[in-house]
Image (tube, rainbow, N blue to C red; front, side, top):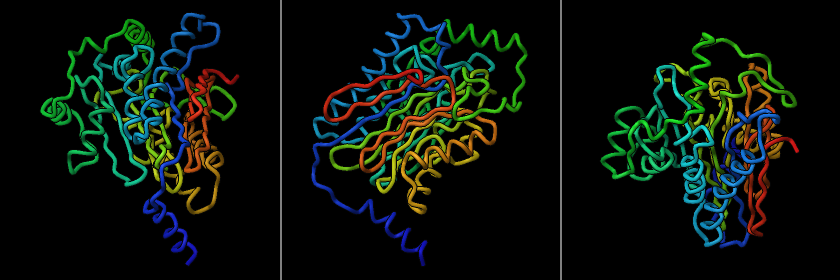
Length: 337
């Protein structure tokens, strides 16, 4: 009986019609694979912060005008996909064969509609393809050549493979291959306060938003794990793993070692802890992250709940992140301070 009542309350949140509010917020991340402090020059830090602010600005402009959260998170992620600084879109990591295969997902917290794409090539902005799949097809996820063909037929911007090439990511792949890194090995133990192993591998970008209509939305995009086996799909495009939104609880986007995030169904767990155990968003994020860490993975999360409370947590040395509310005060951070 308790579960039935709780479930009804949880589902009914999406049926509530809210009047237009002045309050809104957008939160973004650029992944947890940050450089060591002694490798982060002033110029590099300024470039990362500028990209984060530009991403926030894109989402802020839409929300301030009364636009929907879906459009805001898509716009914010596009800015990060177009930057060579992050592991998504233009700056994506290579797979083992030196090829870019990109993943992305988007979810509407009001309707539970979602769209996702996996191992796609040649699509400049995978997050836009994910939204197109959500809105214009009966499907949730498409992958590979079929997804690419659909993107082309839908008129999305297509690019040649060399568009995604960056010297830094190429050199990083060569070092990894020369080291003979084995696939499937368990990383060293991580913790909420310490640095997880393979921190450089988990780069992703994401955005979550609460719009003026009271609706939540989430979006995530990535080039995936560096040196991954061809065809590997991570957590980012898996609804309930790397991306989730529900108006009754929260919107969340994660960055981390995707295999572990998938196995814990991380973002859906956060929502369920809030819906059925009355956790706060912060406590739900912490509990979900700890389950990833207990398996041996590293993880970072951004989230916003239905009241506009912001959560930004990570288990590594840092996470590119930021948020802005209706007051227009932009906050960007990289390390723990």
